[in-house]
Length: 276
Image (tube, rainbow, N blue to C red):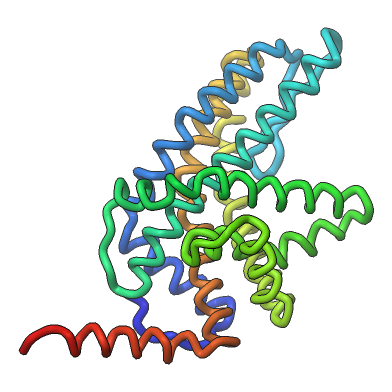
């Protein structure tokens, strides 16, 4: 689908991501919906079970329960469970979408269920990578607020590396560091741009939910409404973010490893084996 492999600027990477996203739109959304819908349902149940007094909505669509009373342990558990489930589900979606987008990138066609089967043996590795990245970002945030930007940058392509190169958790994170280190500002610029675009979509949906719920401040209505908004946002934006990261991965390999030459040689070999 994206046949010209060469170093790309941030705008060009986003353009390529849009092309891939549109080319595999139904499959990507099917994968995202299969994960996001049950995850958001679980999150809503967890939030309601903690019996918050009110909710606050972040600009990225995140929900923070507010309490005036009840058990501190219950409150903390609800926040941790919702946050952890969200991180892990996003990693799983990204992994499956990576396979679909990568196949589209080199002009191959794969079904959503085939991509899911291909990623299934790597499930625990995907979870492991997402936890390593999460812990690194939290440590960076605690030590220095902007310190979270470092793991956000150097681990940006860890999931594509894990899925497409078939290596382990530590090897994938190390490989991601190797690919991104020499192009840190390029990678960080793309990651922040993608996150900004995702935040804009989420903010629009959250704003719509806030308007609908303005006449009533019931906790149940707020949680359900926010869950619907987060579901729609997650289904629409997570595959696009995955597409952008996959294009970034190929871009980094093109810059440092002459990946375009290798791929062209593989295609030429494949064509040579086809009888005239």
